[in-house]
Every structure is written in C-alpha cells, then in structure tokens.
Amino acid sequence: MDLFNTGLVNLLPFDGIVEYHGKIMSSQKALNYYQVLMDSIEWKNDEAVIFGKHIITKRKVAWYGDEGFSYTYSNITKQALPWTPELLELKLLSEQLSKATYNSCLLNLYYSGDEGMAWHSDDEKTLGHHSAIASLSLGAERKFSFKHKRTKDTVSIVLEQGSLLVMKGATQINWLHRLPPTKKVKTPRINLTFRTIVL
Image (cartoon, rainbow, N blue to C red):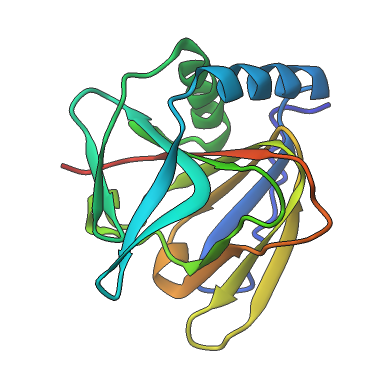
C-alpha cells in the first residue's frame, strides 16, 4: 500500500480540483478509529433553518477545532470543541497527504443509507477563498456525487472505508456535491471534513 501516492488524478473534468487518495490506512486501523470516534465524539442531531423553518436532522454532527472557532451554516452557529487525540492524529495524516493545513473539523454521522446530504457547496465566507477541504471516510462505503452548477455535468465515486478525498481550487464555486440516500447500506458511516476557518 503506497500511502504517499503522488499520481493523483483530478476527478472533475473542469472548473475545480477533487483528488481521491483512496485508502490511506489499513482496514483494521480504520475500524479502530471508527469505534473510538463513535464512542468519544459529542454527537448531536444537526439543525438548520431552511425557508424560515427550524429543521432537526436524523444525521448527527460534531464540530471540533482550534480554540474559539465558531462555524455558521444553514443559519445555525456551532462552537468548536477542543481536539481529541484521535482527531489530531487524523488531522495530521490528512494534512500530510493533502499538503494543506486545517484548523477545524466538521464530523457527520450517518446511521444508515437512509440518511444523506442534499446538493450543496461549502462556500461560506468563513472558509476563505479556494481553501482545501479534506474528507475522510470511516465505516460504510457510500457513493458521493458532484454536479456542475452551470453545465449540470455529474461525477460520482464510491468512498471506501479509511479513504481520503480532497476538494480544492475552484470546486466550491463551480460544483455542488451530495451524499445520495440508498436503501442498500444498512450500517453507519462517519465522515470527517477537515477545513480552514478564516476569522
């Protein structure tokens, strides 16, 4: 297993950069991290205000980072919790492979394939311009899709257990992404998205 494979291919045909590193750790190590995070992270149901309506999702989330960070999306503000040792290890690994630095992590917990995420872009002003987002997957394999905002071109990939996907460049400006629901997946998936918040 080549953990530092440099022959990365851009999954997007134009207007952005998405690099899939594949599995970046052994299956056993990925399972160990999955179990620790499932038990130690302060998971809470996600909240959003959409068209003036307060929504509580089945999906659970957690927000960790350098001291004092807050993050607002869908009109809800979250305050960062202090890093755990395991999150710091995974942050360092993601930074080494993506050649970027991150100061926060939004974690998502999907209990089954019934839970997903609709089309969206991570284009909040607090994320800065053209900053990288490293997405680490643990648990169930899930399909992940991109759609160009103008041309409607789509690209999809199956994210494996213990794999890393990095979105950078103009991706958030030009592309939407989503985690489509599926009846085929019955087990949980944890997704860690390492980000850089600009104060």
